[in-house]
Image 1 (cartoon, rainbow, N blue to C red):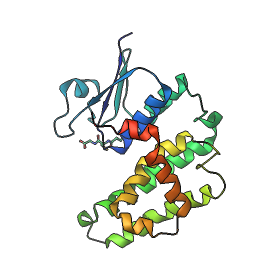
Image 2 (cartoon, helix red, strand yellow):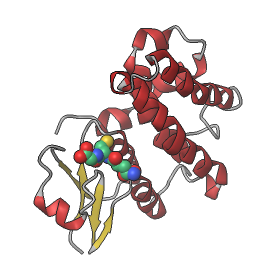
Image 3 (tube, protein in one colour):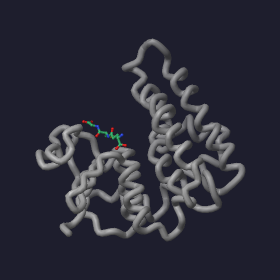
Image 4 (tube, helix red, strand yellow):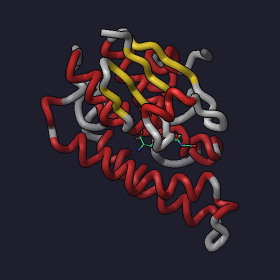
Length: 197
Ligand SMILES: N[C@@H](CCC(=O)N[C@@H](CS)C(=O)NCC(=O)O)C(=O)O
């Protein structure tokens, strides 16, 4: 079988979560950093929708970040990131991808949505931060006492939200979430997947 290729963009949160799972699984995958302004023709031939990440392995093309994570974990998941199929993992990721991401975009690019002030979009996103804070009051990680797919799928998006205004985030009462995010940012796994190509 030819080597697996992962088309990625370093700063894209979807690509980050795919790289996290691939690296954790230890599978041999070559990462190809692309420019979103000039996507390689080979990538577009495999996946005409033109988003990253895209994984090409043994003739199969996987073009959704979550599917790439599942592909990696199905083969090697030494620390039970899948939490044995606990349905709460998928539920939390769905809320992140379908609701929180929507508010994150409006908060991050508030000037493009002048119907409301930035604080309005931030407050809408904060509802999800409050939910995560409550989950972290029960366990050290979102859904267990150890890392899971939920932490890794969400953290790149929470990072983006926190980094829109770092001072604001540092002053929020979400202390458990701040600690959780900091631990993620300093983890060898995250540092490794963010190394400049
Ligand atoms: N649902 C997709 C979303 C991926 C996505 O939207 N990626 C962005 C970059 S963060 C992208 O490639 N956008 C295309 C572009 O900017 O041209 C996934 O989970 O993989």
